[in-house]
Amino acid sequence: MSSGQYSSTPLPRHHLPLDRSRRWDPVGPLCMLFLAFLGISAIHSAQIATHGNQWRGQLVWFSVGTAFYLICARIDYRFFLRQAHWIYFGSIFLLLCLWTPLGIRRYGALRWIRIFGFQLQPAEIAKMATMVMVSALLSGTRMGKMGESKWDLGKIFCIFFVPWLLIFLQPDLGSALILPPILLALLYVSELSGRFFLTVAWLGFFLLAILAWDISRYRNFLVENDLRPDQHAGLYQTHSPLPLRDYQRNRILGFVAPEVVDPGGTGIGWNLRQSLIAVGSGGLLGKGSGEGEQAQLGYLPRSVATNDFLFSVLAEEKGVLGSMAALILLITLASNNLHIAGLAHCRFGRHLAVAVAIFLAAHTAINVGMAIGFMPITGVPLPFLSHGGSFLIVCCILQGIVQSIYHRRQNLH
Image (cartoon, rainbow, N blue to C red):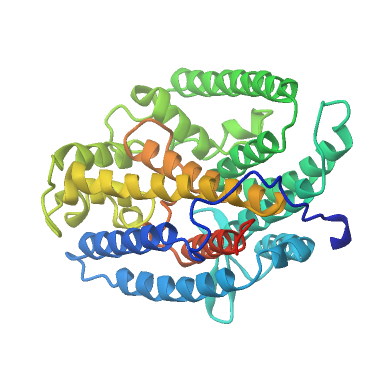
């Protein structure tokens, strides 16, 4: 696929910035800085009892991410348009490396590769690359009615499906959940007909019905055989038509019927129960740094307290005000990206800024929903807050690209 196929068609000239003299957007970097400070502080607090030093690693990764942010902000974002296919196929190659000796298996999942002594999570790069590739393709495509756009939709679906499938097979259900809302948002911005989204809604309802049927069968399997989730070692998944692992079914069942899968709350439901205690006990102002019992005493497992459940630590120690401050910063950052999308000079910039906004919103909604019991538990980190080098650097790169879009917005003198 040649980069010559992609277009940087300028948008209509009526999208005027409010202040054409300002060449750098201050909202994005300020939100990033405050979020990173909150994250590093919460990671440090969560590990005071064990004298852990993950906060130092997070500080290093944020420093590296800041360097990437400045580089991406300075170069013309249309560089990513011209190199979209190389970025995309490079990410696919990294995903395939998981099934080579470079892959690292943890807790039954292949999600990391080791390169030059560093551990890299290819799924994070693949999410970014897919956003760039789909935005590049849509920038030169006029979408309309479903019948008129079927070939373009087919190409976009193939571009989306390959990394999505490789991520799902790791298995990494959390990362796989991030890509669909981004794709739907990009198609919506491309002005695809409403009939497509109605069809997607019906298809989603059908898939949810199949999933509910499968989970119901799994529940009956456990009850009829008087089994706990840790007693059958994946026996049910060999008889199911769905490509789900039984531990993934346990997480879903632990959300919809915890009395079946973990009646005592000491198994699959333990993390959620401790998270709810942490969030509920923080009060308005919190217990103070290093004073949260759930993390300090290990009730909220230390393996997840600094990443997937960092919001719970933040809510317990900083209270409603601290956790709401983090959410307001994330919402402000995503909203600002949508604002910049409206100022973009070309369709590629508009689509990519929208994709980054939905990327942040999806991670935030799933992570916080998981921490407060509104969604099943999946491994989705909180942007700029959760511990993790690959994800933090990707977030910084994406925000750097959005800054470049703002810097080169239309009608700027």
